[in-house]
Image (tube, rainbow, N blue to C red; front, side, top):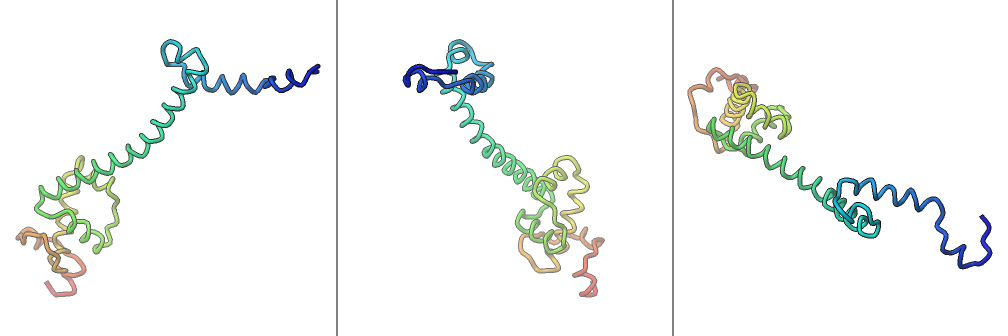
Length: 151
């Protein structure tokens, strides 16, 4: 393309502008009215929506972590053990399950979660951790600590 004056050369943005605008219009396709059709308005709304989407990804992670912790705490309260004692006892017993897995077990596999709480209670009693109510049902659970102490 040949430009006769420098003014025409400066104002020309070339074919790249079409694709840049098209990308914005594709993201604004579900909007209504001028937000969808007018580039100068669409670009503002699309950028704002992308900011919200970025923030929402972080908030979703935090919400899920809170949900998992709430489910684990509820499961621990059902089986008379404190959450902190439960987690510490599992770590000392070399049961390294993350919060998501523990929450799924507490919610969907109550018998499996009860077995984990029994192991944690036994370990807490053996190590002398606070937050466990002594129960007779712990006699059937064997851990390394109970073997070494001759119980």
